Image (tube, rainbow, N blue to C red; front, side):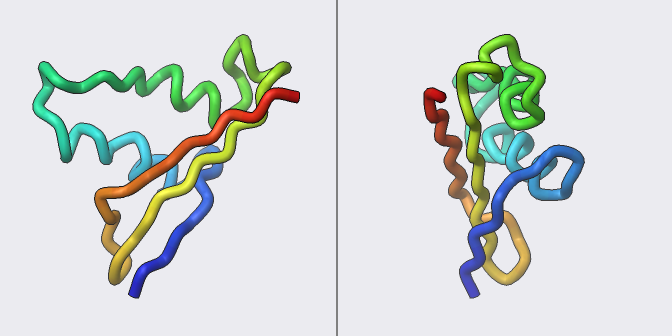
Length: 75
């Protein structure tokens, strides 16, 4: 069964969200800044006062699906 869950700070979903790119891409093709993504989701990024971050990760049968999204909305 497909399940889409919101990503919140200090959750298993956050860990899965941050780990997923490393499972998909080779290290030399990885464009992710894990620290920056975590700061945006936690609200501690310098731009967090101007942006709202909404992140989601998909699961199939309780396993992370190769799909995630993060949307930034200007306040």
